[in-house]
Amino acid sequence: MLLFPCLWWLTVPLLVGYQLARTARRMARRVFPVRPEGHVEDPEVLRVQRVRAWVGLAMSGVLLAVFGGWQDVADAQQQFLNRLLFAPWFALLSAAVVVALLFWAARPGARRAMRTQLWPAGRSALSYFGAWTLVPLLFTTAGKGMSLQPSSANGLPGVLLRASVMLMCWAPFWWVIFFLCFASGPALRHAFNLTALHAALPALVTSVLVWVFAFLGLSTGGLPPGPVPLAVCAFLGGPVSVTVVAWWEIHRLRRRHGVRWRG
Image 1 (cartoon, rainbow, N blue to C red):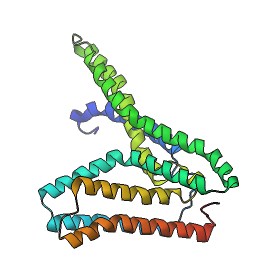
Image 2: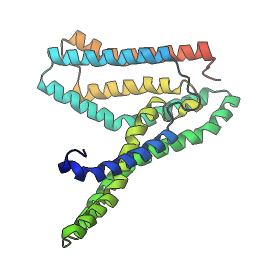
Image 3: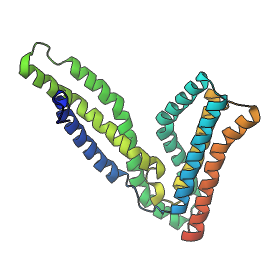
Image 4: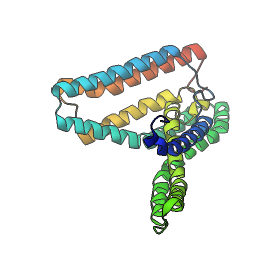
């Protein structure tokens, strides 16, 4: 960038954006660590999950390319945006239901241990969804603040004033956006740090969530394109394969690490 004087004006925005992203990432990793308490790393399970994800993505692309039209591509994009928007909220609801069932099934001693870990996990979830709630509020506030800046200031003082107002208005909004970008992966992968309550919770929440999204997509966009038998297999293949991998992960947790449903 320094070699092109026409791009020098991007230096300050990039430096500010880097600092915002850096501090947001630090906070996101503090609230949602990559390896939270109670998390059991299983390389073989991770490898199978990656292979399943890539195979599912490839199959979806093949079905769209062979049997789909432009409307099917638009529907697929809409379903992707819906999942991106509603995934955190459905994940929270699924996690609450699964935690309630496990808490009800646990032994009294295990319930006391789970109760001590419930508030930290709940606090992490509240911080995540509080950030989501702040996004439209900060966006609206930034727009209102930009409309209030004086238009009579000209020259270098006017440019500096507008840049300062823009920075003060938009910096909190982009900080929250960066925080959500860095926090969403670990938060959804580890079910909002609920592994401290029970090591099998992320797999259980994933199993419930994938079926919720499957039927949500069926109700809004119908079956995938193609012949009906193939479309039904494609519709069931995703959630069934995710559920099988999740229950295999739970089986390995029980066999290798002694994880019990009521323990």
